[in-house]
Image 1: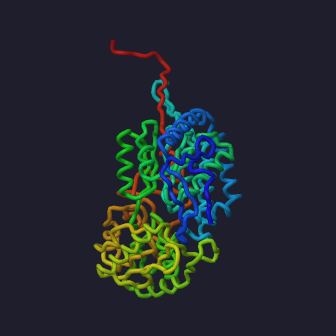
Image 2 (image 1 turned 30 degrees about the vertical axis):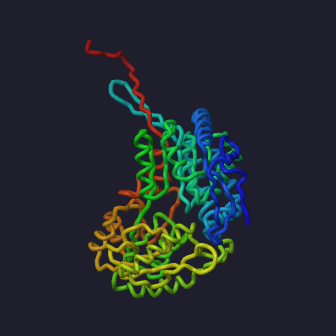
Image 3 (image 1 turned 180 degrees about the vertical axis):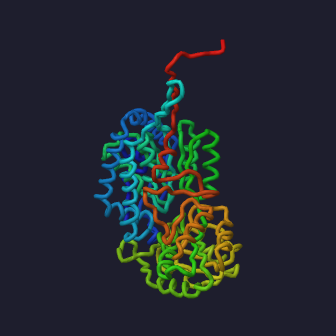
Length: 484
């Protein structure tokens, strides 16, 4: 099957092609076959995208928030109407099972457009009364041109998590998808224009790191939002800082999931599965360090293996499948390398650990037990279906160990003691936390990390502060005095 996009880029309200750019093959992870081709953006394409965005943003910012929101809400409706077709495309782009993309990808994108579309009309300033009859007011204003750089695990969702608040605040956006998953963002741009978004306000350009670097370093860009790895984040942050640009960095994690012995066992296993094997483990917030209180470790591992035997691994387009391939051969090889390292360093392989024979980039759900804090699989982000189970004895110990990482994206705790739940969460150095749950991401709730896991927040009202700026105006109501 060959699923060729209309063209590689979407600029100024239309598809645009320039085959002078480097070819980028679109590979279906379930088979390893080429199903499409796009071309990396040339300097001419980048210039066209920037110029059209800067031009369109001026008029867009002058509209009322209600008018801007109306467009975003229309786009949300269209995405929901086309959820099945968009989900099929996302599955071809990423390899994720259709059973997952139908409920977690295009729908999440629509949620973001609807939420920020509804919020746009409420973005007002503040009246501040002062002494002597004077007063001041604030205005919330657009930043200008935002650049969004996406990751390959949730291409459609990320395109809207970044685009929706940017557009709601009156900005324009140029979005660069991951070169691994280039197709879905083009559909987002197309639907936004169909919903009434003026041309130029949401442009999509393809490419690898060189295209991202050109966009980030362009002096006409006012804001950069990246979803990616810590090493990439360091480079992008440094480049943006050189131009004093606003940034949001949603980076990696090595998040702890803490399971106390009073928690419901099946709920704990469900949480651990969602925290490690959903999207074949390719989620930045995954709780891949699973701390299990020693008294229930054996029961936990036994029940976990029983549940993993129920995973249906197969054709991602079959809705019965609930565990798909890795997104690329490169990522598959990286994960296999971590598994090898885990064995070499003395972790006990409980289940899985092998590539699944046949076509595509499939790997078994993998669980290691008897993992120590200094092992590579307990320190580095794997971004694949590999769970590390670590024993602990008491609350004070596990808090120290859970925080002993450079990352701080997410954390979770399972316990029947709600007082302990809040007490432990208060001590965990993570930006996004869960109690008796894991990996929920409603658009109403801020999402983001601390330490090396990033800066800024996506989703919720908090995102507005990262896509807008305040102007303060002092108004004097009496005569002005001066010393001379």
